Image (cartoon, rainbow, N blue to C red; front, side, top):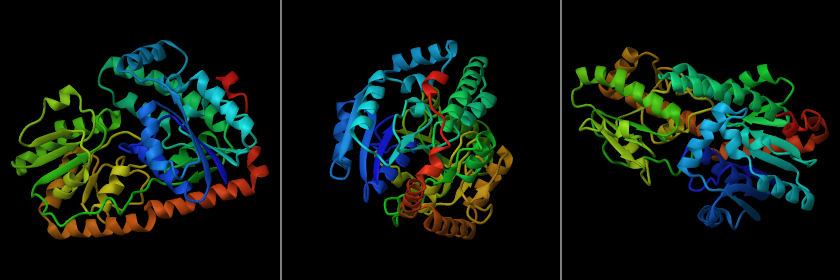
Length: 411
């Protein structure tokens, strides 16, 4: 198949959830299909992407766009006052539309695959099957951020983004012939909103060969959390953990230690570093921190899609304590593959129980690993993705009827 793959950023290096999914889907599709990639980025991004995929992807096109912190802050303020969400505005660029038109004029694609709804705001003047990879139900993330925000200003901003993103996301979905979602839960949400557009579950996965534990002895009474700290659901969950759960654990286990591993920790988080709270910032490799710790914690209270961090922990054979939100979209069973706790006291009790019970740690570890191997390895997911795309192309006339055009005029 000939596939145009439109994305809002280069997936190289694959250092956060969205980039990881795009990276692996691109890698898997490039094995057997002719891909054309179109994305935003700078000269360095292009060098990195071509170094990874230059031999596999025939055509790679970049639209240069500079993302400065100042520009983002101005954009957030403008989005609060304007009619479009921040992510919609950041994804819009006249040169991107011009390049899309040029590629569609010069090529006959079987599939136009777009990552994220805010990137799906462009006109797709093509008879290719149009598919959006949703990653999350984005408006649902903003709804949860609004409901969990502490300051009135953040509540105002997230509520505004939620309402705008809901409108934009629904229109983006209706423009597609089909949608890829990462979980049954996300499919059910979108089926209620847009039942007429077919949806297929292509879950997130893990590179089990990369996330393999070593024989290093795990530190007793040690916890680990990984994730980009500038991502609001991660930051919110971590602050919630440190404020309400960690003190309860410390009363029973005074020498408890947590490794907080990930990009962009804000100053107010860095100020909490101590002998018991180790904040690493960016690291080239998260595996040593997961490998040395005894329990992996996922205290998330918001988000959507599926958590790549949970699958990585399963692959690294470390037992997991998580909220229901933290393992949403993954077919886990409480007390079998993970421990699930949604209140501070029960979460702390679950961590303490695991740290004191070697047999339970081993049971959760083995069951989680087997679940990951059977359903969430990228190689398995890649085969499902190819079958899904081929079905859509083979039944093209059936699926073409589902999309609505003139998106730019309607939004």
